Image (cartoon, rainbow, N blue to C red; front, side):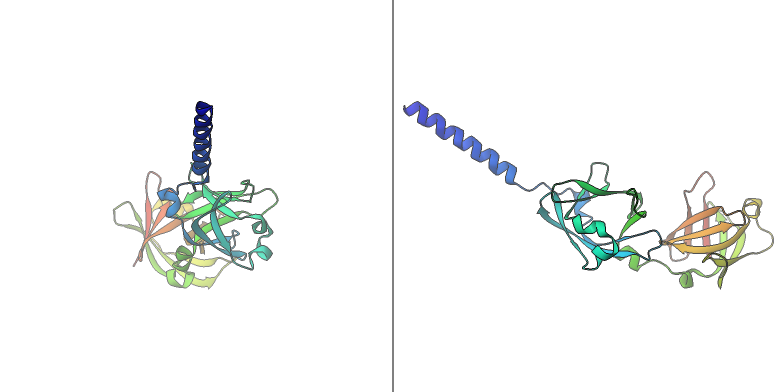
Amino acid sequence: MAKAVIACLVGLCALSGAAFAQAQPPAMSDAARALVGNWELSNADRDMICPVAFRASVVRGGFALEWDKECANVFPLTKDITAWSLAKNDAVQFLDTRGRILLELTEVESGLYEGLRPGDPLYFLQSQAAVGHEKTAQNVAGEWNVVRGAGKPICQLTLSGNAAANDTLALTVKPGCDAAIANFQPRTWQMDRGQLVIQSARGETWRFEEGDADTWQRIPAGRQPLSLVRQ
């Protein structure tokens, strides 16, 4: 009889220990902790914007988040999203109360995530701090040198503030440019989600991201990296 009681007590202790272990919140990785803060979910044109705060506290399905009160009107999907998590491949996942992934966004460049759902617009996610420091066309307009690698300027461009076709701005190429630039035939430019985009006469594009206040590097860099350096 005594042995049976002891065995029962041991079994109860084991069950209690298991229940306690299951009740512990999942550990937040350093990568996930770095994402805690204020973010912005938007479409490609950023004419649909939804602020969201990532929290470190644990809720059913993942970690807590707080949507702006207008988000449900901007993106109806957000009404069902109650948690966020970071997948093993560092993709940001938005989940419902049952832990189902309603939207997954992968990092396409540092701090910028992109995701797609059938029938929905392309979603972008970036921190509000990064959005707040994006350069505007007014900040970037002016005289620029095109530099290959660490060499000397191979072309001079004027990024104008005057409107061109399709919401772009006018661009002027000064005489004497390197053949690589002349063959590309740059015609217009614009700012797109913090990147400087130069478009050719054929509709091709070169994208540049800011390195410092006066230098932008072409992305991807390729075998012959190009930079824009303010004159």
